[in-house]
Length: 376
Length: 208
Image 1: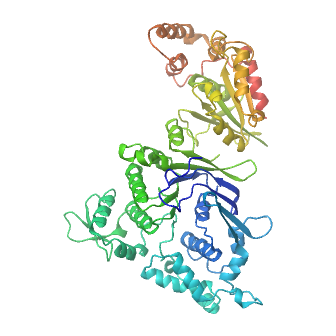
Image 2 (image 1 turned 180 degrees about the horizontal axis):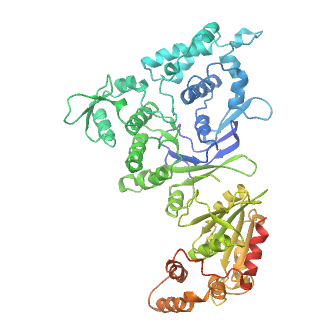
Image 3 (image 1 turned 30 degrees about the horizontal axis):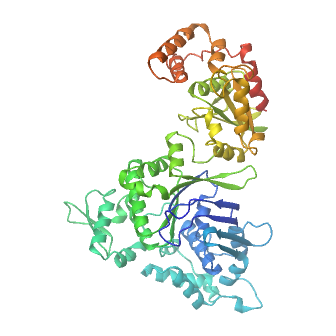
């Protein structure tokens, strides 16, 4: 197996197996690259695969990560009153027991998460237990969240407070009595997961202010943003207002289209995910077909710069075609051997399987106009 | 209602167009699956009517040559489709014995032995023109062509051209036949011809 010729850092995965996680009974992903584009029919499990990639060795952190991703996808509705039973039904599909397993083959690392036990440990406001030490105290949860999300923002601090309240054993009455506003929970730290349609949000303002202080770095970002805002001159760090040529009054980034906000978010999140992996759901959302080519080139270059392994999903054939064509340009050839497409499909046994194609293979399929998007 | 899924692998553009025409004829009653738009290498068909007793998905894939089976480059694609419960139909020319690995018996053996054992139960082979003789799809087309399209002229032209220029005969024949027949006309083939019986029987055996 061709493994490490792209691996620019030790955290990059070259293969993994997922057992009994959501709809994956036994899914093996061989021959991963640094840039992985995941395609497949509706409900085959593309987003679930992104979630599986959030799994970490520590069970509590792992489930917090998954809950956090659930937050980002669904807001409050599905997270407000999470009973351990619900957590088990959300994440484990084991015929017996409440476990799922993720195996990172090249790291010889097998992570077994017992969802029920973990759920009881991190949140048990409505259950009587004989051993109260089974709960995690708030300070432990805080420590855990701090270690998991090293990027701090004001909004994150506010969210953290609420998150601790929600998932610790204390002040459970508060959990039920407070009328959480969905908007409040949309403020979050930069988890290594970008859900569908998430362009602008205030969460990355602080990150930009804190981590893009270098003038050259800012200039480079302005150059990259010209793809969607051609006359952009400057980005105000405190407000994310955009100054454009010939106009003295700035315009907030949020007032630009989804494409501009999407690119800005992706660049921020790639920087935040430095040295690890980033999962982006429906990366094409908000991006016009004519922009895909340059969009991919920017994303790939920035991901390489920050040593980030990228996992993105799409339903858009033009996005896949441009993933191939963007890498054809002479200055992009060096990235070709790190590119993969992963087609998820359901087998006769109703299990999910994957077909991984390297650059040459998916290039031939695209050129030949064969369907590599899955679906039936 | 039974659900049949066929992955039909053919050599070239003429084969793909002809097989699609046959399956879209009254005998079989399929139509283009508009939702899965046609590409230069794949044609998707499904039953014309939704309440048909037969529910079926058909993909006709133009390979570009039977040798893709021999070299194995297509095996992973077949495996992927087999895992999704497709039956694979391989429809290739016998060609003539004076060329290496050609002629009905030889071609059949070469293709069958090239298929991995795990795929063999899911793959069924039909050798043109009639699953017993040497020749190619053009032999079959010659027997079932309606008179008015000048098939002889087309063949003469293509053979003459081949003396001066390297051409893909099949593609040129296809172009001349299909591109010069107005779209509103029916395909230029007599689908009730006895010469087609072996092929229609082959399809009927897998459409149930």
